[in-house]
Image (cartoon, rainbow, N blue to C red; front, side, top):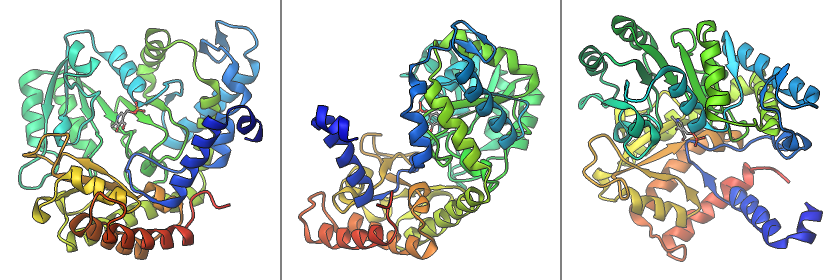
Length: 415
Ligand code: PLP
């Protein structure tokens, strides 16, 4: 760091300010976490230079003996962690992993059945602005109006009507457990591949805090930087039957040279995830999310589906008469980072939204427990309902003082 600061003080300054930002506020973005120094070390390492197109033992470049060891460790640890037949650890990100799954199973124009974005899906699940919606025929299911959870009868009806090549479960704003067994049965009924995009919750699966999709799905794609707490990247696990199709789709169909430094960091992360400490962490993430959701509800900020079984909850702000956009700005002014989010059947456009999404991966990494979640819920409620987007507003300042007290007691990256 000293050398960087001497040569490029502008970028060194950005790094330090970002560390200060992480330390100074509450990070409640459900898709973020605070990665370990060991993972960061592997990522910022000499392995970033090596070209290694291909797979261990089958490379298109010489000099790959060392990176082969790193990739083999990542593959074996990933397979062991999830009890999977096969793992591909090369996808650069969640979107790249998903692109490879499309490449393996769908020809342009074929049909995919997935959760709609406004009901909790993801951009890469067939939205019109993504390659997935431009190149494939995406049909979308949503949530039941009463329960606000996945409408499995609708999934079944749409599957029978459209006979999709692939059925996809998973998304970015799903607070409840997904019934993988039911999805598998529906996929079998219509002869479809069953794909789970587990980006959000795979860390909870790794820590055995929630059931795994691996025994049910043909293929599971995921990111490695959310609850899992690894480097910013992606991976895919699949059954033996689909191994060759997945490997060919990742390279050479979709990607060139793999990022060997990030693959090494994934290996470190998969090792971390196999420890009892990580399992305890994953369970605490869920307990914390549940208490945060319930307590926000007690403050009038209603959790959709009535709560959560995972690391995140989605809240409807219509009862308190504040938009998602304003809530995000008011919380931010008080040192609480969360995001506006569409709720199912949202009357507001996505840029405004009627909800917020909150998640507990970061604050749990900092060591906070259910008592702190109750405090945080009160602070969010105060900032959102009485506060202002101006950090100088008295309510912003009052909440920020309480946030500072919390983060001093539970520091991110302790000095
Ligand atoms: N799939 C899901 C369900 C996600 O939530 C995300 C990211 O938030 C992705 C895929 C894409 O991951 P990435 O941002 O790494 O491309």
